[in-house]
Image (tube, rainbow, N blue to C red; front, side):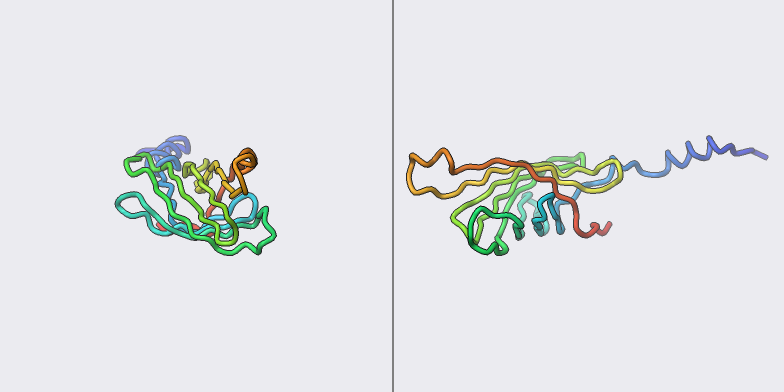
Length: 149
């Protein structure tokens, strides 16, 4: 009779259990960021394109923020499961537009995270005010609802 030691059992389980790093990060779904804004990203098509909606929790205008459309693209040839992407939000409540770029990661706990950088361009009255028309920042998004496997 073969005696199975606890160490041998743990090693065999480690080989059978898929690693967290092999888990795919999927853009489709509902996300929230570190400022309380939320977005929904629809299915990514065969060309890597997607659409969705964005509701910001922060604004520099006095207008009430409303849900605004987003459209973007995911890098199609990424086979490692942590794709790069970019999307544009055309704000419904102001004369501005924001472009985001980032990467979808799976952290060490198996949680999907979107690390992004953005540029927000606001309309200004004339060229001499161009210097104050663009803002830059970063956001970290986490999934609101777990993705079904």
